[in-house]
Length: 226
Ligand code: DC
Image 1: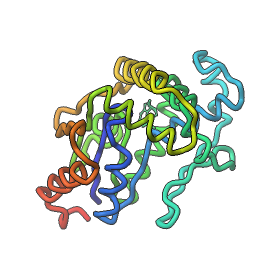
Image 2 (image 1 turned 45 degrees about the vertical axis):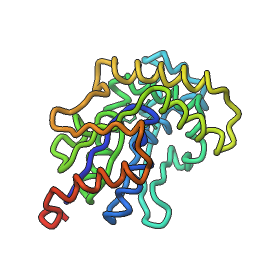
Image 3 (image 1 turned 180 degrees about the vertical axis):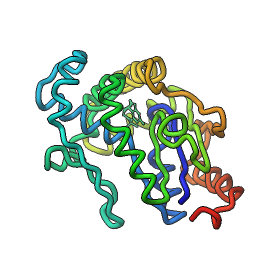
């Protein structure tokens, strides 16, 4: 079994790079942010006050979250039997995910799903605490970063491509808020694992970033693990 942990702030390029790397290596890609987003979406739908940790903790036990993976369809997330993937990419859900991810009970709820996933197959996983908490023994740990402006611009263009009507300033401010939430929270904050390789993608194309990661993978003896 082989695992690659990719962490970093919003807009650093984690999911595009992780997806491309997983394709090149022929292993699974797991986007862990989607699990937090799915719960954020669920709480918003249920009109639960996401800042109220007691309410969140009370309702989470009723929430059966399932992660399925299929080579053709990729990752699919179900909450109480309803597939939620296409509802979780809005800015509102991004903020909700960042807020609830501070909660210990929420993190515990999602911890086992993520750890179990990596036990079954070789994987590229991206998130905020993959190298530090979920896969502390990952074969390769990468911390992706980029300047705030570049990250906000990437997210803004992604929203436009996906048909969301949003102002650049709103995206920029929300990324600032999420950076603060995600890196200053007490439990499993976003931070660089001691043994992670830091890659700044501000001036790199997707292809260049993927090549950098693949060159790091090549330095590891893949045969031994796959
Ligand atoms: O990667 P993303 O932007 O889809 O993540 C959404 C939020 O989920 C992020 O702001 C913080 C939270 N998250 C987390 O706390 N831990 C992870 N491993 C992944 C995401």
